[in-house]
Length: 568
Image (cartoon, rainbow, N blue to C red; front, side, top):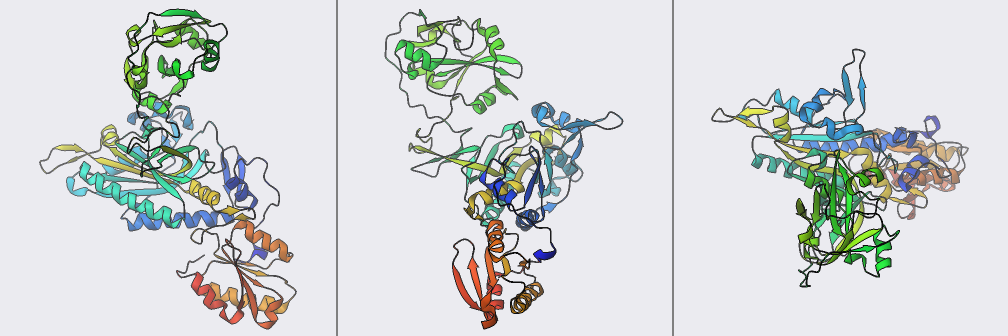
């Protein structure tokens, strides 16, 4: 591609409304442009990168025996009602009506439609297994879009679904996709970890995530300093290391704690440690008020709590709701005498004579014991902390931030039963189909690679996803030798199908070099004053290693860079 007659621009200054390094660099490189909060244009140079990523994904999916199709984005709302997920998505789903007042939604995910598609062919046990996938736009009304392409309202996703006649078949399909995903993310050059995750709205038997390690990652990837344990923070077990107290149980005593409504304030007032207290948090779980009781120095893990309750939405109660549940303002809730369901973290069962809120303004109770209230359930409800013991080996847990770029789900029979996807087995008995679901966010991959591969000068794309592997730069368009020799090499590259960028603009050499560094072209060949002596300069973007190369040797250099020719 010749830049002289192409759509191309770069920005010298940082973009004010971009809140991550990757999105700022992508915008400055003229690859993306924010249209609205969470909505982006993908511009020609960015589309080249996205197409390279898409090609890698499609190549691995096809080589792992998946068949590509395309589902509609505009879907009758009844489809999600029938599967029971319309309420689960709630306001995260874009909804509209057509001219006949029929309700539609913009698809946030397509499990239901793939199940309907499978029902057309899945009548007999002989029809299985098979794997279907699409690369298509999804829509989610995110509450807080941020970090450029990381969390947006409209995004391109590869979603695949496997269909098997039994769980053993699903296990094989899952491992096939596991291998495909490893190959995809290895080819993208990402530093990633595979972690156990919450199944969330998808449901099913198992979920694993591919997390690209990143300082701006919204997820916490939990590892271990002594073994290969890896998990998402949301589901990591907090190992119960407390022994049962042998302290004699005392009688409850009400104490006056004026204006001390937080653990820190009560701790200071009573000269106690936060771990001596048991805090009670009031939550709204799908419209019902519930209480969670846990150690004062721990935080509630809302994912664990919602899973325990089977709740779609779990939000911290407001002041009015707390007053209704406890009779007191926020900060004085306690489990004793509380007339809403109480759920207790398992570590509390080891405590004796602990301090809780008295459900009365400016008062707490001390010497509270388990005999004084009855929890509806006891479970691991707290958030894991860095340094906690590893649930696998007893080592110490480590934290890293990650961007979720892919996920694997063993859905089991959840959607097949909801969508009436059954087949006849060898005994002519109806059985539900076993499904798996596998997603990759293509633009997230683009942002994650940009996040991991950049320096102070700009992007540093790996060869596999760079918009062009090689940039040919002409220092002076007024020098006929430079122009002639560069065009010869460019024509050779085109004849071989190499994706070469020719910077034939009438800009200063410094501007051209800065632009090539900013947009992250991995290899640069420069024709300057040495062209008259049969010499050119070759620069590797990532290391800035430079060497002089004879012009006659440049075709061989291109051949070595493009070991597998790629058509533009």
